Length: 85
Image (cartoon, rainbow, N blue to C red; front, side, top):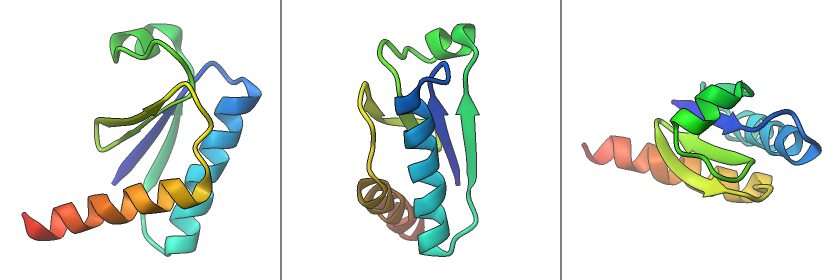
């Protein structure tokens, strides 16, 4: 699983990335958490407001801090999706 947090490095973006890493840790899973800070990459992915969160290429949030519990829910739902395929 790949979790991407898009943002230029502002406090909201840093917090969202930290929450993503914490969610992965609490769930005890292996996942890559990537912070995408390059403006051209952010724009290329269609992000208009940061922070934005993508999990395995799908946008889950844009323009707000995502709390750890919400991130855990998304990750667990994504894992169940993978099990049903």
